[in-house]
Length: 463
Image (cartoon, rainbow, N blue to C red; front, top):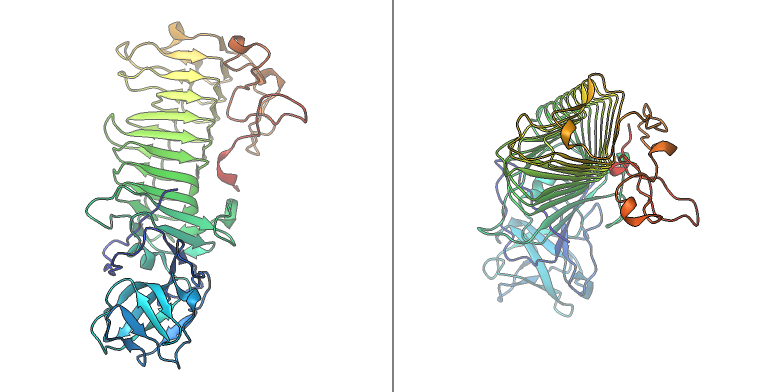
């Protein structure tokens, strides 16, 4: 998997030296920024970072050995163990160089650690801690580097973070992964760690460099955007929620290779998912939800590819500027369900539903220069103005009059009724083998049934 790096804007960077690519950091609201905070998972030791308190606390009675990559641990401070190997020691006071060091060897007989680089000069005192998680995202933001993982335990964090690069060139991902009780679990809903802007900070996270992966997080309360990508490429969001921010939930400047999977954006003042910039700004969404936002559900000035995604109850368009929409639902939006504005693109629509929207179900481009619009197995129902605009001649196999019979649209359950089931494309190409429904929700087949899948909706949203 990939790795994530964060840095608080204007914070002072703490040198971490050449910490291993296998370093994993621990952040928890009950931790302490003076702790060791990390562990090399490729080592033979035992991870001491997954705790609130430090496992070992050294005083200035501990000092740098004659070999300056070694630390003489005072016996009154701590008894060295072979299990210490791989843990990070944070030097915080004394004469030695402050920073984070990996323990690479343990000399039990001499009560001495070997670390990954020189601590200073022989005889310098070196107080600090090994083990225990860090307390703030701000602290870890200045530490992570290529290929690191940052584990964020469930809780509320009130900081503004800006991602940046740890070296002049980075081609390895860095992960920022929320968890509930153990590394690798997949929290949903309110179990996900929350980054709270407290209605005072402009953004919750600002992405300032490529190769970042965010998973299992929430953000709320920023005065501008919850998540603000300033224009960097190759950023992935998985099971991340943005809510009640003063701008967009997710904002992306002109960039490409950005993906949202099982994400939700709701009750934000602006758009749910917004992309600014030129035609190279590409946004891909799968299994996402944009609901009850004060603008478009999805607003993109470049290209938007969406699949199994819902846009409902937004004051603007459901989806604006689409390259491709497959098995999506636009319901109850204030303007059009699906709107194409870029005349240089040829939108491709398959198995979608536009229902109960304030104007038109599907709106094409304003000229023919972009080529024909393609609509296959598409349903239009009860849109105020019309089903189609500027794309009538290019519609194929269009169903225009069927009520999707949602199970409970008011309760955000957009599973369709019988008349939308198993009529999606491909159908005639694989007669008797295709069971695709229209819209974002796919029914769960009974035991012994064929095809289909479980209902799809982004990220375990709790509303």
